[in-house]
Image (cartoon, rainbow, N blue to C red; front, top):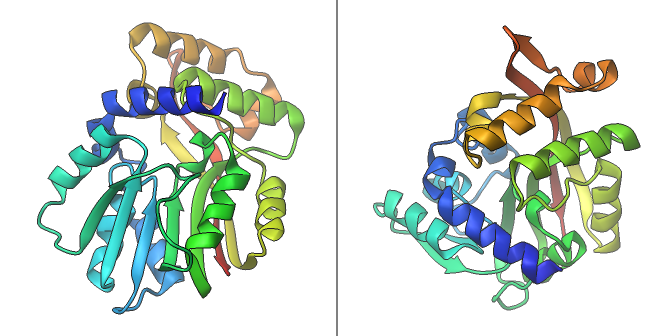
Amino acid sequence: MSDSIKRVVQENFSKSKEAYVTSSTHSNQSDLDTLTDWLRPQSSWTILDIATGGGHVAKQLSPYVNNVFANDLTKDMLGNTAKHMQNLQNLHYVVADAEDLPFLEQSFDAVTCRIAPHHFPNPKQFVNEVHRVLKTGSYFLMIDNVAPQDEGLDHFYNSFEKMRDTSHSRALKISEWKNLLHESHFSLRRELTRKKTLPFDDWANRTLDSKGVTKVENYFKQSSEEQSKYFHIKLEAEQVLEFSIDEWMVLCTK
């Protein structure tokens, strides 16, 4: 199952590699500034950015540290990102699986992963791998979309994400992430939960053709009052303009 999911990830991200570089969600500068402020990177550090995608985190941190290793499962995505950032000399690109990292134990001063773990079929293995490659006392900073605690809202959310992107595995609840981090012996230092507003057209057209966009839009329009209120679904002239999802940012130490 997990191998088939990862093949879908590679296929989908190869097709949409340029869209993730230009995505307004992924390139949000205030988000990247907050990440830098929390992490407080040092000039001697070597950082690993897992599932780098369009490379926004790697690019953001590169001026502050010695080296950044940007990895992604999708070679086409990584190659396109490297082309956009070829002027940054301390960035290194590695095709790698987040659940099977090709690095030795205690290799990194910090590991980051942003808006990606919901694609990972085995999040427990991902967290274990992060712990393995981090130096003792070092930092893991993760940002990802999370599911509501309510089971019905969880199902609604993960359903429309899967409709929009077949490489979506599952967005976990915050409680599930905390259990995984605790089991891997991470200590939570700081966390933030916030609503993230997404423009529907940018979000949907990144991965879907017009027929697929219409299907997802109809799913939104058929939402219950509770679902519409929770996800702040905004309609205008029978068109979905935007909606909001939950995002969790967490800083841990090994």
